Image 1 (cartoon, rainbow, N blue to C red):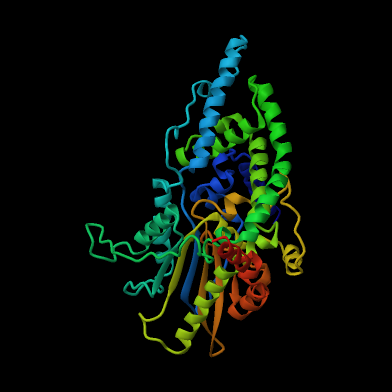
Image 2: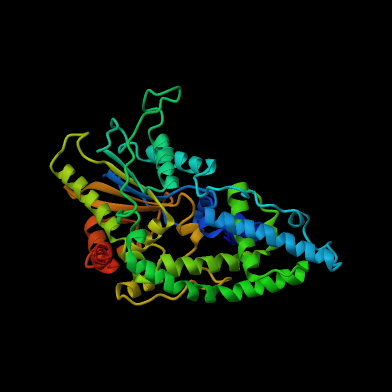
Length: 469
């Protein structure tokens, strides 16, 4: 017995030290610029195991996914061009004042933005296509009973926003999902329909764009977010000035952190901008990004996610239709088996909040009482709310509806997968396999008393628009 205890202690000690010695990988700390594969590595041990009973069969799948890895937007390209110009000035000033250039990294002295001169931006890049394509393949392999029918747009519904990176993500996903299911070309591809609503009226996938109240709230909160982030930027700016002898500003450091995220995520370069920051500084910058995400897009204010109620209603309605088809014995091929949506972090994050993901049980109780949550704790404390996990590139929530033959009666359950892994639902006693009626009562119903038009001043805005014409 003593030998067994000693062996167990030795194993635990080895495991502890091997984890402690794991090298810091900045690619796992890029907030919402984190690549999908890196995000899944971070969260590998943070999800729960979930065994589906043998008597249960999947009958419907809902997917809400963010677009894959994309190029920087036009606004961010201009920011990097400004950084390019200012770094050149800083290095020139250092030379003119006869400062030693030994401390300045060689790459920085001659750096030019890789996106300089680009007049377009924000498009899905090849790595993003790959993320969605392989996600489609894995979804079909995981749920063969759902994807065993001939394709029809009424059976397999694919919806997207009108933003090109989202629609391109939908196409890449569907190419994987229906791979070798058609007759087009050597790859045996098939055509499929991808539909979208007008950007001006898409309250299911771009509710944030149509919500006047949210736009006003966000504008009012941005100065407060900047104040919260300022101490982090002040601290790191002082250290970089001391270390490299260049008169960096807070804006320089903010842009260098953005450059780090773009280089590491899009170009797999971690020895340039990212090398300016220590692991502890990266953790602080990531936390500052997570604060912004929490306040402006997450649990920081109820409006952030309540405006997503049309999406939640759409998800629940699709499940109820699937249950009706099952109960009434509809013939295969005439009812929907999957509804797949491709959008943005501004869609995925509120939806995650609506179904109460990434909450402790005590936080769930606060939310149910409509009380505010504390901000995510500062490193080195652990936190559930990390952009690199909650909304990486290609991040997704899947809700699988199961029909279960239990006690000689058919019952329905919902399993929630976040980034393809079962995740606990605080509203369902911490389970990921939740009775559908409990899911509706505890998680969905409290939101349905909120009307999108009332929340977002849509009617008032329409009246203003008509009065001005």
